[in-house]
Image: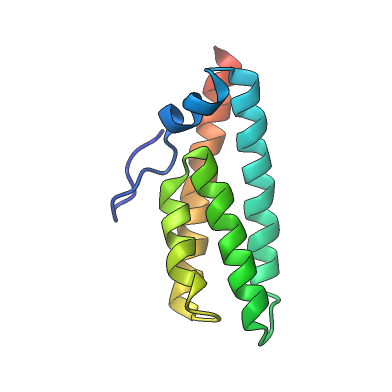
Length: 116
């Protein structure tokens, strides 16, 4: 569920998030749900930035902060890498790939929280 990404950082670090939520499962679920929505909206927006490098950087930066805030460190790192590489196909592919892995980890975590 929170396996390390092949590059190193964890997909979801529940211990990190737990320091801020005090172990409140409902709050954790809400925060993971918010990140889930932000991932979807950011991926959509990144694909529509045209030549706007500032918008690309702002989107990558915002998703980086949101990801790191809840312990989605692999996604945060992918976004940090892409932040300075506007419209780079490899950077976008990395964000998309790690986003999919992170979304799967969120779904698994949400299911576990619901079952508990």
